[in-house]
View 1 (cartoon, rainbow, N blue to C red):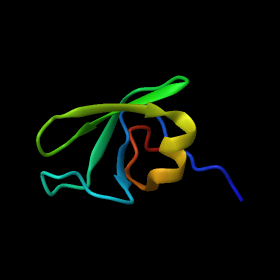
View 2: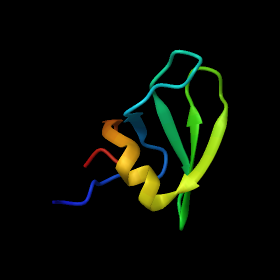
View 3: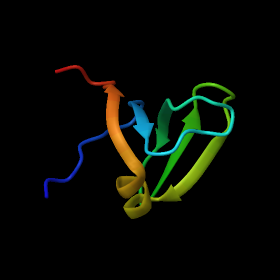
View 4: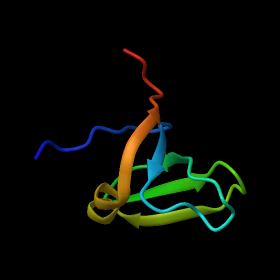
Length: 66
């Protein structure tokens, strides 16, 4: 299976939406852990990269439009 491609400042959709009702997240930090921020209520969550890759559905808006 091909690895999902995502980068800093991308807007992504997760498999489950945030309790505030929005399912758009902005990647604000990348490393061994990934920090994402809810675009609705601005709450941020840090999760391990492997878990993030499993829970991410797709990239909605890419920060680096090539």
